[in-house]
Amino acid sequence: MAVSADRASDAVRQPARTRRPWARTDPVAVLSAARHIADELRDGLGGSGARAAARGVRRLLDVDCVGIADLSGRPIWAPAAPPGEGSAAADELVEQVLHTEAKGGRPPLLALPLHVHHELAGVLVVFGNARRSAVREAARWVVESLERARLEASAEQAAQAELRALRAEISPHFVYNALTVISALVSSEPDRSRELMIDFADYIRYSLARHGEYTTVADEFHAIETYLALQRAVLGERLAVQVRVAPEVLAVAVPYLVLQPLVENAIRHGIEPRAGTGQVTVRGEAQGNDCVISVEDDGLGMDPALAEDILAGRGGSHSVGLANVDRRLRNVYGPWYGLVVETAPGEGTRVVVRIPRFQPGVMPG
Image (cartoon, rainbow, N blue to C red; front, side, top):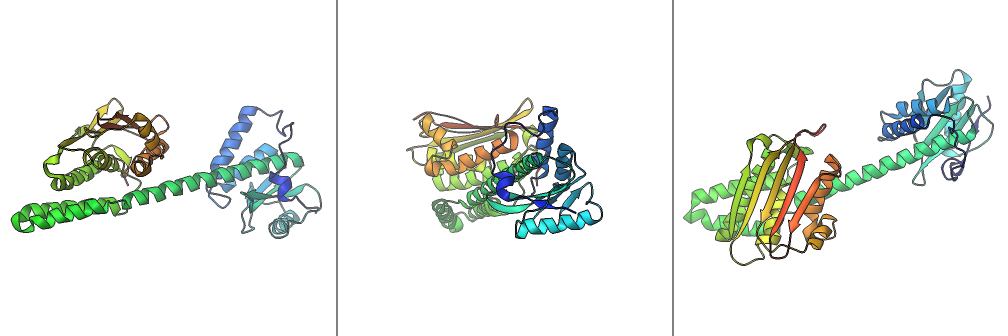
């Protein structure tokens, strides 16, 4: 049986032709199929969606069968491998593409290498009568889907790495001051010292221990109350605290570690630098289908332009926690959600978190 394999430059690097292979096909159906292929390839050529992606390519090309192979060289076929000698020829062709990129022969068996970010990732194999230009266009779609999946995975890995860094971002200054206060109370107020030591242990556990992706508003409020208890012990009368949360939002699922950084930011950058007494107020309440949480301080405040830079990650040491929280909220709930910062120099700062009370796929771990 005649076989053929094109080089990667033919498969994915040629500019798109003016006349599309499926120009006479319903454009809505084509776009829907392309989106379906991209969704199924989120886990790569060896993922659970590879067969469904192959089915989508087969429907678009209207051929007998389509195979997708990763670097292992074992194609996943839809609906099944070519019969008889065709299957052996296809396997041989895949090996040629993966190891030598040999070319020769002609359809009905065609294999195109798939290069993702200039690296060979696999092979698209088509069995049937299809225009070479159409197969090349299908290969481009597959490659673009794989590239997008890799970029999304990289972004998720970066966000997780930033979250791990956020978990480990415990101020040495705060730890030193907290332990100093606790040790000073061991003799004079042993019960108080014991309570603070328990609070300190809870604070460390929640900040550093492994958690699922989501927790509850109740757990987040418990964590910030623990932190505030330690900060009151350190700052004494310089810090006044008010925490109020409505019972109906306590069970709301929320991404892990989204409230504690806001409270830490209010104290570190709002209260500690100012003279005299400062107050931090934390509220949580239901507003229709939303849960609204605010963290407010009457500290130094800032220029609104600086607040904008902070949320964009351009605020230096101020921005690590707030930018991470804002980005994670938008990734989970969409661009309409995230942090809102209300501030002005000398007027304090108010940070508002608005999230849906019920969100599909968001469950405490």
